Image (cartoon, rainbow, N blue to C red):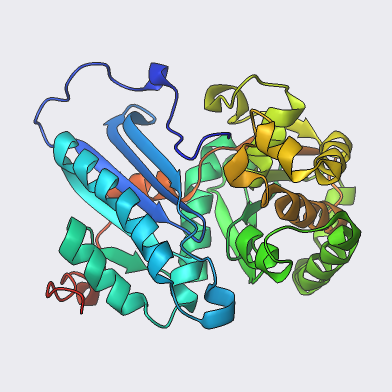
Length: 353
């Protein structure tokens, strides 16, 4: 994931103009670190991606200390959202949903930012709770789960928080169902900022222990380790951390979603490579084709969070998902999802003061 901008492989995109049949749906996931757009058309068994966009914007930079979105972070994000708005116009999206997550949940000036986004781009940001974020991520990742394995532990390492979901998979013909979800306020941006932007190797173990401690409550509630010992649990990870790690392990010359999405990693190997990444210099990480400058200071924290998850729930293999909230939104929209009545009115379109 070397570049600040990442889209799906060209093979998955139409190379000709999209007819104006308004049969496209669009999803925007505005997180603490990334702004992501996916535009797709319904297809048998799912959808076909016709356009995609991803840019690292670091919207949550400094929110942990100030409780506010900074002017610089908002400007970066608006620049990315203008690109998204242009794509939405060109693709004539029939319906669009744009969600904002952890950084905006923490920010005292989110409503002012939302108004500014609407005024400058026409995009209406929907601030969603952690539970809704987890549901959307799970909906987007569900097609990768093996229905022959009764339970799944799904996690998403974000910029401002990490979500863990415990679910049944549809074993023996039953419908997949979320049992419970859990969110901890540890993400790659928020933890990085505690260490002035870069987690030193000497503090790595302490972060692993701190994050693992936060998961104990969820483990005690569901006794997931007992199911792991019985061989009835699969684990799936959705985040820039795990997709980057997979690219490094596979020694890709550059990140390739088609190779990574749905792939399996041996957990001991993943943790060994995590330690190798931890021990690299920042310059070495920045030069790696699957890490790059924009993730060089975040991937180490992500690896520490991943190790905490794997220490708490010691599965043998991890399935990688380069998908999540955006795909969940698209599945919802194509199934006829509508926002609650109180959210249907757009924000006040008056200029931001």
